[in-house]
Length: 119
Picture (tube, helix red, strand yellow):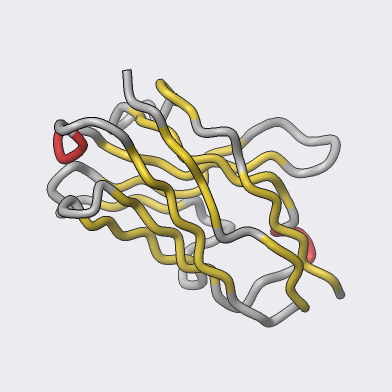
């Protein structure tokens, strides 16, 4: 089991940027595909982005493609989500999780970090 702790959420105006971080425990972090997910008010949790353990393969949801960038630093056991040109509809609790490439179902989850985008 991997323990995950997200940070970096906050309040930002539309058009602004934020960087989320997710720190993982354990010495096998590089073996895991990692994903970011979000759950907006009154909505189901949805997939945002994923990156394989090596960082070679990346996938984004259509709604964030071109605005968000997922990356990882295996030396620091950390995965990042750089969010640019934020929109009010990006408002959500953002979670990182271990995930399976292809199905993008979450395994171990962090506690989430709130991102609020004001118009």
